[in-house]
Image (cartoon, rainbow, N blue to C red; front, side, top):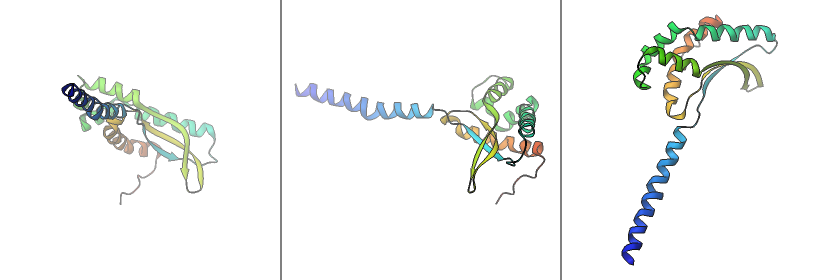
Length: 150
């Protein structure tokens, strides 16, 4: 009888002591983790002008040549276990978004353009690296100098 209690206790500890925390960790790694950069827009800017900026950003950032360059720079083909660069570009295009939204500032909410990537928690480092690689193109399209790094 005591032997069965000991075996049952060991099985219970293995299931709930190791299995449950591992399952919870894997569950959290698969949750959505979007990464975006809010770019403030003048509050008095007309809606049509903001939409024009959104469409031009989306067109420039969706350029396949540019995305293949980023794919090769970051070696995304091996990180995502895909066979060729075109599959990686298709995946980036599925994750990439440019939309109009709001941004919190010390003065309250202001209109903004969100440039971002959808991804999961386990891919957040890759998402941050891709967004950083896309930033020079964002500054070029907007026609402004990039912010100086400290």
